[in-house]
Length: 216
Image 1: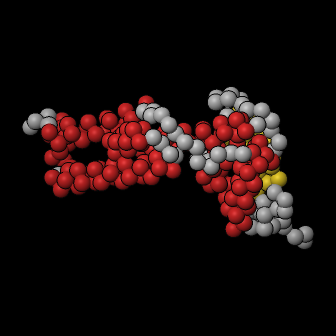
Image 2: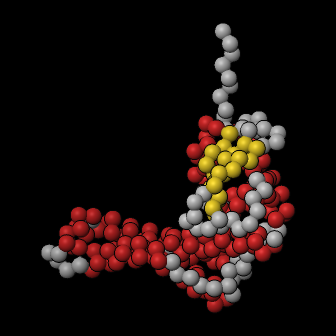
Image 3: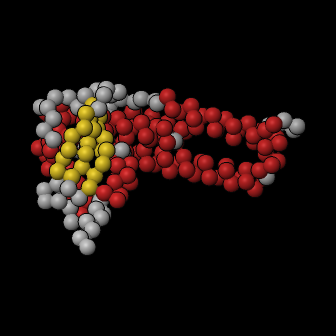
């Protein structure tokens, strides 16, 4: 009987790797520009698949524009899953150096994302439940949760938001934000949490992608 082809260990984890790389669109744009030789503006990129022989990337010229797929081969092919991270990191470093991509762009303005409505509603619900008068829906919810659970929530939420504020301070330092802008971001992250953090990170990615165009 003929030998069965060996299973590709990288392709078996393609879905996970594609999901992970969704958080690094700037790196994927660098791959598209440098290794696929795509000229002109590229606003966004995504990984559609990866195996031991290469990766399939999709890029768009503008946000929301139709995507075009390209194939970036690995030379030499990957010997196993444990080679994925070092190879992608090495390719990232080479692409960024060749393209002149800024590693840590400065964020000099403050932007408050619309998504802050989500934690605002949750915090409002927490305050309402805590202070609700007897025989109201908030009071019923408070009684159902119990005093211990309510105390735990009031300890957990401020602690997490303080950590988010500290994380934002570190991100602002890396992004070299002006003092006033940094203070606004730290206060906003402490109050609203993850929407501010995610939006700030997206701004850094956008600035890194824009630095490629400036260098061309």
